[in-house]
Image: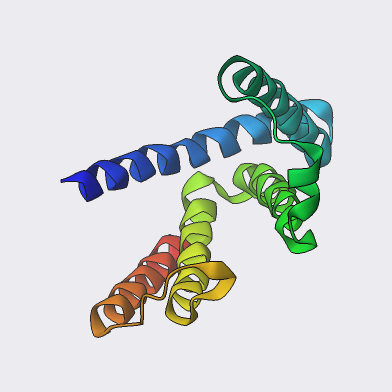
Length: 147
């Protein structure tokens, strides 16, 4: 039962991606460039995160931050690339086509990460069911892109 609650939470958050991308796309057009829209997205997110941290969690010590390997900080680069790409592409080809491709890309990389236990993720080997599911997702992506 608990796993389904987690799946529901993931579905909810996943549903926010096309909303965020659509809103960001409008902001980018309004401001004249996708990177300006990305900046507004991250600035608003930064303020919200700061409020939550101050109110509920607090900050890590500087020494703890210095212990983190350098590559952990590259996730922020991924965030900028993700938001900017959605912001640019959704107004061009629509939320469904963009997010379908994003989801398939995420899942293809995820299956590799899980299978090999990359990035300190527990190993979940590829199974026939996972391969069949991935093939169905790719087929769905092809059908969506053709329409």
